[in-house]
Length: 329
Image 1: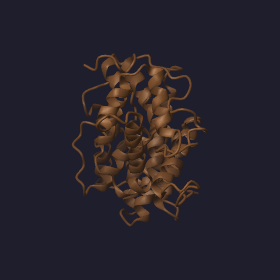
Image 2 (image 1 turned 90 degrees about the vertical axis):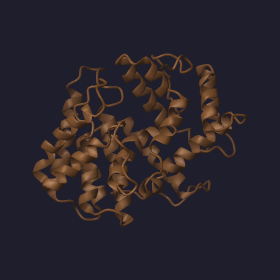
Image 3 (image 1 turned 180 degrees about the vertical axis):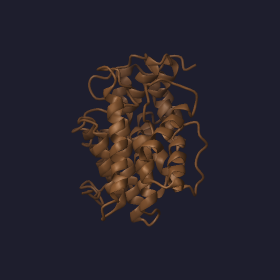
Image 4 (image 1 turned 60 degrees about the horizontal axis):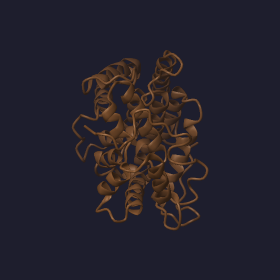
């Protein structure tokens, strides 16, 4: 059963902010449990389909994709699974896809088939990712072909082509979907939703930085794990879809931009504030950002929201790629 988000929190936060807080809490809790990509894909498809049960062939396809993700993750030696593109990310993106698809269906924006394809696309979008960095689109093409092969028996030709197209759109280097391409916008939002949240997002930035550093890309790793890098990420999706706005993604993004201005009030804009924070020693930066985001009256993400989950970085914060104030080149 899908629990609907509250209209507002007890402290009077507006509905989108309350929805984002609630969803981030769920995602953080999922990070502390086994990823369970097969169970997540089954549940996400049921959430996307609505009140009736989805057709069994689609459910079976979702579970097969999740099982393939699980088998790939288990094949790594202990501690060697990609820090970011592992089972948890793939299950997380699938879970969010179910929520976005449900919001889209409830708003009359998509039908059951399109909602199901969104979930299947996210269930397989990083299938067989090994943490290495390859030419743009290479991994997405490999994942798309594998996903279509695994799920294909449940789909007709047009559906297989659409499934492949959606996965290819998760390549960050792919052209942005047209404004009218709701499905294309939703897959990108599902892929990055967790990374755009204020608490989980920093943990995911750290994981991606660790993965990039392991691939020998230390400069990119430092950029990803910085305020400046996160401001760039906020702008990547551009205007959000109505379902993403309903789930509070825009409110979460706005809260973090407001927190940046709060942390460095003399800075001219969020980018300048981010650059100033990145120049601080790590511990001082953490304290300033945590206070601006979570502490005191008017905190954008709302005190005492941080209390159950700790700081945005968890404990202890590790930066094996070096402090973010080093050379970006």
